[in-house]
View (cartoon, one colour):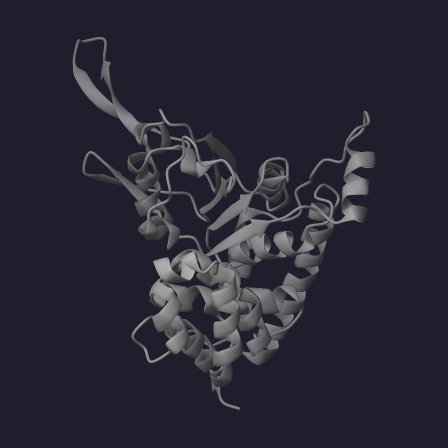
Length: 335
């Protein structure tokens, strides 16, 4: 089995040593998060995979499922400077990226000074992101892709690392605005949050209604997170995994000779989806204690990476199909 190396290859012994160190840190991170977030292991895994891969994530779930609590906990545990923006219909782009204000000195001279907005954080929580207008939502586009913002023609770099974890309520649609496709594509994955299991909900009931509640603690620093993100980008990937990613993503595009896609998909994922699966597969492998991703990682990541990057045809929606069903069929056929 051939192996695809990265542009910056790493000595195998160094890779193993760095991976073992990262595994120890990941174990401590999982333990710290688990003291605050009960159950939802799959959600925690995907959120951490997105951050380890250096990307952004969209958390979709009903109210009361600890979406906000999860983001706050991750910010504390990972040692990130975390800010929160509550998205509302009257929120303006300047409320996110900042604006210029006029000042006057003692001599009466006036000048403009840029006042940074809350986007200048290492972890930005965009709470209920779909409640703001598309104009305001688009204020995040440049930041999420290029890691800087432009105000009055001047570039302002964002802190490093920079991650956006946005939350969205899928049930209440009144007074909300769908996220533009271009912005959805900037999210590495969409993480769906469902009701907790019985045992997890029992633990929530017992441990969160008393006078003492567990609090998150810092486990690593932002600098250490960046080191782990660099390690993930240097992990080797087999040719088998690369081919599986390409075959899956291309099979989700109409006009590529796939009957399932031609019948049910209006538009499919672009190359950014392939990049997302590649990075997330590496991160998931490290999260599970492996030094290289497998085809199983590609299968596990197909739904969260692809579902917000494709849309069904009207006929498919009229037949009661959903994106998850189509992706599941594509995975079975392509991998």
